[in-house]
Image 1 (cartoon, rainbow, N blue to C red):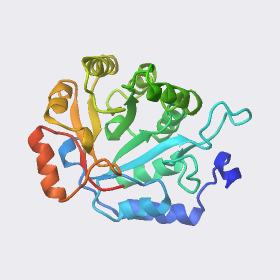
Image 2: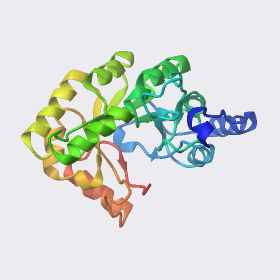
Image 3: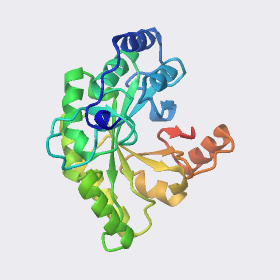
Length: 271
């Protein structure tokens, strides 16, 4: 496993053949004109098993968590690490990003890349360009850090960002936009915006990056004020992360967020 931490193995050809067959056999009801409110997102498709489950289900969007293999920097001697689909550094049995993109492209679905490390964005954009997937099929997720560096948590996060490159700068987000003018860029606030400085940071980032934009929010962050303040810049989307929101009834909870004005993707599957 230590070796795989830095040298991620490719999937066996038989595994890839099976995934490609499943991708080509599926008939998702997605087109570039499909509204975000009709997106059914397969939140986790990093491994072959997760991808196959999604391809055989009714999801019309596939999501990968994107990072570098052995995603710690700086690591001398490991400057050309592959981009992989993995939620955590120690997830070593998933697809590489080129493998994931090959299957995703064949599936005909919308494709979401959730960048878990800013260091992976530039090499991931190269893999995306090589795949030939058009921008209108892409949702590219980056973060907006709302924590203040003077608090103990802010200082701790700054140290974390230094070594793990998890912070997504406005400059990197602008590179994403230049590479894919028609892609949907998803700006995820690090925590619920409360102070005016939070909303100013979000609006400044949204203006600098340009649309189309959506704001994926953990369900626990969502209230009518947050929705009202973010919607001038893009759609508002909701996801339920572990421990952040108790889903009691998906249909009723979805309607609850729609009444608040949420007009983007609502993904209430527990992960």
